[in-house]
Image (cartoon, rainbow, N blue to C red; front, side, top):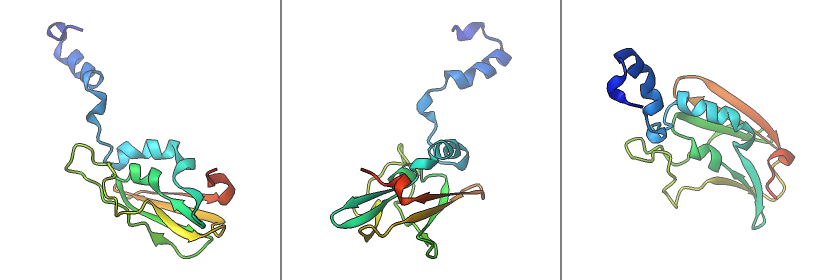
Length: 140
C-alpha cells in the first residue's frame, strides 16, 4: 500500500489496519471483556496437588488489568476477594506475572472444593460472574 496515494479519509480508515497488533496493552475492561467472555470456562481451575485442592487463578491473573476486583466463593461460603499481583500499567507488559511471592492459587483440603462462584468487577463499573462444579474445572 502506498501511503502517498491515499486521501486523508482513506488514510484514516486504513490506519487501524496498519497499526501493529501488539499496540493493545489489554489494560481496560473494553479490551479484556471479549477475551474473558470467550474463555469463561477457564477462569479458574482446581488441581489436586501435594495433598490439597488448589483453586488456581492463573487465567484471571493473566487478564487482570481492566479488572477492579475478583471475588470468589467456594461451596457457597461468603465471598472473598482474590488479592493477586497488581497490574503493571506503566510497563511494557502490564499483565506480566512477576512476583514469585504472590500465589496464583488458594489452598483447600484435598477433595473439599465442590463448587466455585467467581464475580468479576470491571474497571468500567460492569460485573460478570460464573459458577462451576468441581468436575468441570478439575485438572487431570
